Image (cartoon, rainbow, N blue to C red; front, top):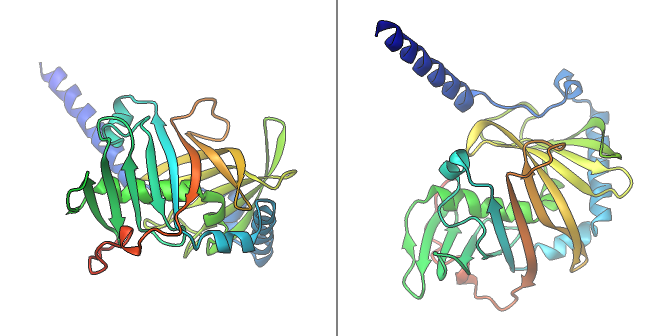
Length: 289
């Protein structure tokens, strides 16, 4: 009996230690060359590659014009649901039809549920304050960690190549080949190249021939400091002069054969006549990220 109790105690301690490491260890996407130090030449080459990619995807002028408008994007987010993902994914979110309304140069947005058990309800975020709406009822303002995470995340993934072009810290990180294609690697983040608890890191795979971004390795500091994953950008289509990926598969690494979840974007509809208070219903309400 004592041996059984001792064994159980050891398992509990090991699980606790593993949990502590996962919560506190900051994953680092820097390549070995970047860890040795970032030179001005590496920064210049990384920035040039992102500029070339931006040009191939429609250009900086088109992006500047595009991000001033209000958009409604029809989408789905389909997950492989298992024990782990069920703890992370909100109930009745996976696989249902959604409509995300946002302005690309802001973080205020609304997510409407167009199908499934939540049909007719809306999630919203304004100045990092979250709220819900059911039908024609009044807004219900309350803190919701799922809304605070998923709405900005969907917005970012919908336009990921363009948002990454605006990163503060950019450096060339080497080359790799995958599935017969050659890639330049560009590291991107904000504030500091070293891992930070409040800033994500990105390792961008720019395909040499097309200049398009095919993969983006990324961290998820808002959920778990040790997490690193990969976005596979697929099905590029032209929208108002920009080439936008209409499917993003999230998988463990670039070479993975299976996705953990996939986001599919069906339409990017401009809403020039949408009242400003739709995305900013109560300007006085402000919270911190």
